[in-house]
Image (cartoon, rainbow, N blue to C red; front, side, top):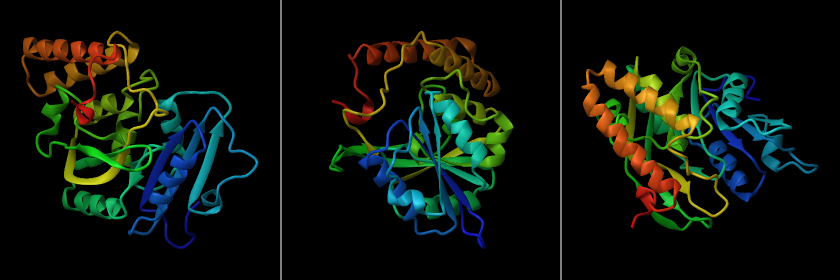
Length: 268
């Protein structure tokens, strides 16, 4: 799974529902990081690897797991966390790309900020063929208060300390969608998350991508709203102010779920 001499410094977790070209590009980008000592855990949620596994599956830095039934992203990621071994855990979606310097820059930033439980980065938005469509900018200060309004982190860009994940129990399996947003909220109840303003990942937008629509009345949305309110209380925010924020957020989710509102990074 990893080099026998040098233990991995970072475990890159890649959940997927299919083995395809985009996954090949994602895994290859994780293995091509300029920093050494990286392991990659790929979890196929509800499928089989196939009779002819890709070349990267033979790399001893890679572990490929599969489940016969679909369990959802949160449970799949918890499985990947349990099977990984490094003190730092990085996320990468199966259709996204890590820039070569991504992990080196993020590890250096965490070393410089021991108070951070993890950090994300800005992203370049690309289409199915890798053509640039735009950027996703991220706030770099006071991220906890940004969380009270929206999710200010790109999931594929996150690098987290394992001890922080252990502290909060990982991803919440009740969150079929928005499991990342809920996790950032819970981590921020007792710790701090940061962001780098440079685009260190490529976020791919294409027709076959996992749906980003979520009903504002789903269990996932209710869990996120409860986590937002707990964080607001911890930060000393007036309940009425947070209730208003939650109303705006819920309305936005309803419009997006109905297809009447595009994500910010694709607007107008």
